[in-house]
Length: 269
Image (cartoon, rainbow, N blue to C red):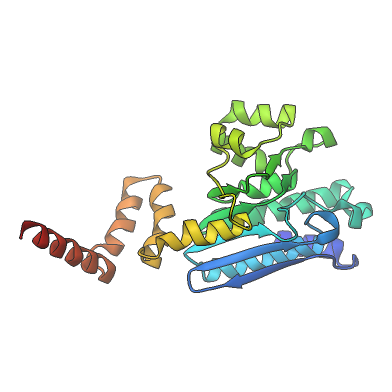
């Protein structure tokens, strides 16, 4: 357990667990599902620690694809302070929670897995921050995101302000946080916060993400998928080259080259 998790656990261990975070895996997709029906999937202390443990496990064995979603027709409404107000509504408690959740979200964002936040219902406050740690955000037609923190007398505590600025730019991020704009799918597509909108006939954003986006990439080798993010995030050309040469001449590369040559041969004939 990392230091931030150990400190947070020490502060909140007397609080009864509430809600759950589930991890399911197939060979190519890991799905994290938030589930706290009575609070629109707001994260309780026990859920935050579960999420920390799950992300640690994924760091050890990262899947090609990762999907983060919520149960009960909604995504996440931030932190469930009500179950631990006497602990978390203190300077020490707030700092411990912020340290833990920043660590969790940074670790999730830094996974080589290509990640999708599949959002039904609402992603408000910390839930909107959580959505920003994924590579792509997929919204159901009626879903919405909103950074409500300023109206609650605080700023983003889980690293969401910085990540939002990186996604849509500082000025647009400031607008969303200042005016607490409700980001609909159409507005999100326009400002770059939303990447895909699920089709109306898809039961959930998660179903659309899985069946339309991820399953459409079955032809890609798992090792290639988990090398794409390190490639685009490379700060030096040497780093990008090192990712490239790791795959050059490998089995997937040779097989793809042979298929291309065969197609070229058939075309000439």
